[in-house]
Amino acid sequence: MAAVDGGTAVLVGFGRALRAAGLDAGPDRVQTFLRALDVLGPRRRADVYWAGRLTLCGGRDDLDRYDRVFAGYFGPRGRTPGPRARPLPAASSPRSAVRETDRAPGPGEDGRRPGAATALASPAEVLRHRDVAALTAAEREQVRRLLAAFALRGEPRRSARLRPARRGAVDPRRTVREWLRRGGEPARLRRRARAERPRRVVLLVDVSGSMTPYADALLRFAHAAAHRGPAGSRAATEVFTIGTRLTRVTAALEHRDPEAALAAVAAAVPDWRGGTRLGEMLRAFLDRWGQRGMARGAVVVVLSDGWERGDPSLLAAQMRRLHRLVHRVVWANPRKGRPGYAPLAAGMAAALPSVDAFVEGHSVAALEHLAAVVRGAEDA
Image (cartoon, rainbow, N blue to C red; front, side, top):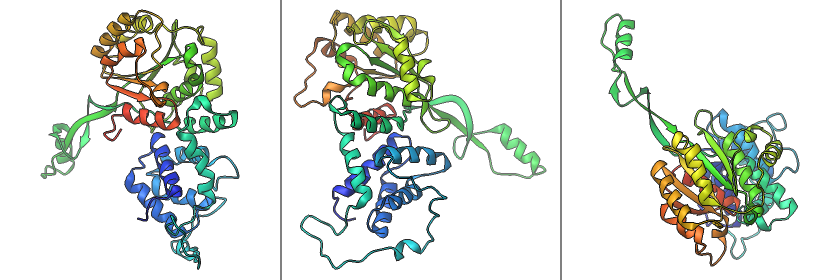
């Protein structure tokens, strides 16, 4: 593989966006994707689309999410080449499309030109790392398209349900039925193992005044978390807003249209841009919802800057109580991405000893990392 240039970095970022949307676009598939583009030559939009669709998608269920991420990452300009717009190329056609040139690679070049598709994607790759609080209206719209393709899966856990498996304990019923089907002739032993299910994810989104620049993006992230994900693997996601009141907005986010969902949340939440009493809100959550089963064994994500107007000792006590109840506590702080940040605010300092993972939450890339932490990725 040639040295990574700016264009390749953009395409690798496209792979990260697909993983954030729930596709199994691991490093091996991304490498195959890049090799396919090397064969195709200059990176036209249609070539990138088909190369990614054929190398990064693992099945029919991935196609819809792939199209959404592609549109969000490369922009809605033009028409995404569908099967009717351009048939799949024959096996030999990619090689016949390679363009040769006498131009020698310049300093810092590896012989490949970024192409139109990379030029389109570069702004999206830059946007992935920018603070959403500093975006223009047009940039916010593009970030919303990227957030709409997000998927959030909880860390897998073994359930009590047993399923057929190649290894594990012998399944006597299936084994006997197989023998009877064969007329009593010996057959291979059938086995079973415990199934894995994603843990429940509970999102606590701070909607106080200090979080106003981030509330829209974080609620869109929560909306995507409640709707996206591969069939059968999406965790049950509960969403609450916290400020001076605790509001359960899971039902309001059931609208599939993000705009309608956020309008419903705005109507349901009475304390937009108010103060922050994190300790009291956590106590209310634990008393009413947490100890009744919603938080037991779950991954709880607090999306807040940690600015507390109440008693920090109360917040510390409730965080310890929360930590004893759940599987993991993840705290995403949008201000952590700023240079020179230190968790010196009284609320944040009081909560940190009970936090398992303290991550950033100010950009699309930071939210992608948060999604990886929630699903327990080892490389997160």
